[in-house]
Structure formats: C-alpha cells, structure tokens
Length: 57
Image 1 (cartoon, rainbow, N blue to C red):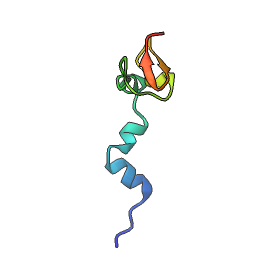
Image 2: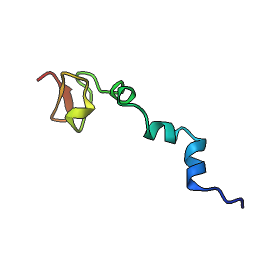
Image 3: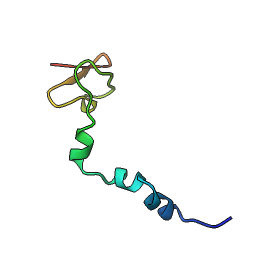
C-alpha cells in the first residue's frame, strides 16, 4: 500500500477549498424563511432561528 500524507489527501479533493472558502461563499448557503435551522447563523440575513425554523424576527 502506498503511503499518502493527510495533506496530500486533503489537497487532492475539494475539502481544502471548502475549509478555506471565503465567508461570502458560505453565506450563500443560508437557509430561507421556513427552512430548518439550529442557530441564527444558519438562516439568511434578516431571519432568526425560532423553534428550529428560520423566521422573520
């Protein structure tokens, strides 16, 4: 079995790009009104997480 370092495995896939993605890229994956959430940060701008659902405050 050929030895492959962890760094090589990470850089070979899309994981490294995901780990160091810009905040704007992450923000685009927000949850819309009525979507399931855990934290306020899961919801799109202007929405809050109320009882596991993104809602307008």
